[in-house]
Image 1 (tube, rainbow, N blue to C red):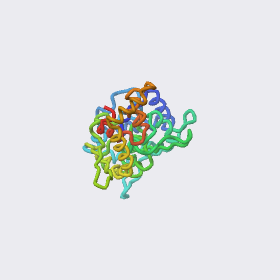
Image 2: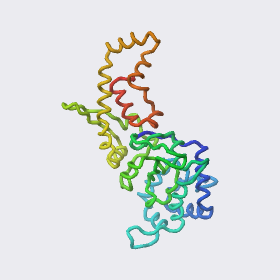
Image 3: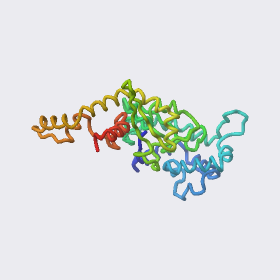
Image 4: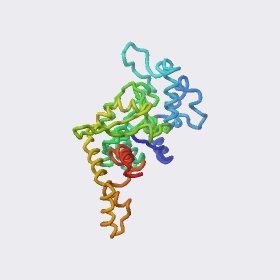
Length: 308
């Protein structure tokens, strides 16, 4: 799992315009009036357009609102959102069904020839899934996205959040399918309260048969991601890649390093340039978003003292 930063104001405005075109102003006002009955009292701050502040609310506000509802007002929310029914899944009331169903139209919306799924992946600076950091989610055409949009808070349970920008996580199909609507409290890649360098770390364990087990240490809600999306199991297929890195590092000992420097120094290569030739470029927080297994390799490079 990797960290994502907030979207630019330009993209947030673009996204809001797309939402505004699909939900009438009268419906937006009704939804705000209704949700004020169960949302935290300080959620709306008197902005000119309260519905817009809901749609563009940062993740921290959505998390606080969900926690407030779950602990204080869940019955009120259900009364406002769903019709009285003996059915296991009661039907949504009209205005909430409108916002729930508007997601499908929004996800297929096109700006500049590119669908929303394509645009949201690009604006997040992604090439690989932020949940597993393994599978590519880049597009194959302007209207053919490799990403799905996971509703971090399930829209069938919380229809109010159906089209909130930071409730939509661009992910691979495998993570979206396995996560599904599990009731675990997951961690979002937009969560700025997570210490991304220390709360999720990769290591390895090598056995007598020269096999490698990949060890993932996850703290807090990140552990729910590892379990709920079966990410640890998914990573075990990459043991050979880790073993190849370990063996390469062992071969790159002081003697061979000096030999390489003697041989390649004639063409003016630095120690860092030689390392890049052997191990590839140093991985950064930015390149983790575009490089499969980036976080794992970053941590192993650090553990093996390849890049200090």
